[in-house]
Length: 293
Image (tube, rainbow, N blue to C red; front, top):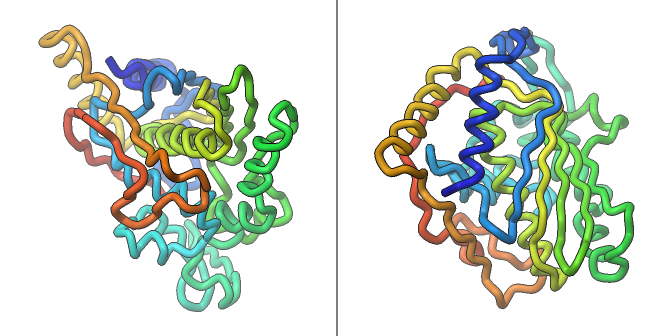
């Protein structure tokens, strides 16, 4: 039975029962809990929800856009039918219309991008290249950190990084990852983020001749928007009905990675994701929920 579903739905249930009602920049109130922690053994199972369908190809491609392509240009995502960043993309003049009417004038060099965020930061500091080099040549280093939070470039980021930091450690031939998230839309963002950072760990482990190990995911502000509550209640109902009928949820699928690819930058990033596949992904169908911009 998928252990991600267990942790995730327990978190959702606690947010709805114990969370603080809070206003925020989007204008859509949330229920929130601070300092939430999820833990996974990546050697045991691949973490993806089964009580609802997660668009895993879009999640993986978004991760590759950030850490492999190191891009901020959302046209790369659009070419792969991914629209999740369109609301935070500057127009053809490099202007981003923020919530509340304020405009962010980035300049034409940032047209069709999200500004100085995510993949732009990764590329500027060569974060992926540096972490791979350290994993290969000094795996006991205790300074293996990839930080997407750079104060100098926050004013020109259309959306400052939500998942802003990952820390890496090697123990007993296994690659472990700790992920820090400043703010997480639990119904929409969290399922994406967990699966994509798990894939990142698997890919880097293969690149560096390691095995995937522990993954710890820390959320500073875990929230559910008020207009997402019906969707979460539907997911909780699905869990309860499946357990009542079968005594368990679906098992987690298996992640297949092309064993012939040893270079992180050579994993296929086409829409088809030829080198990365999920085998036997059983789920209980989609649940549509709104995103707050």
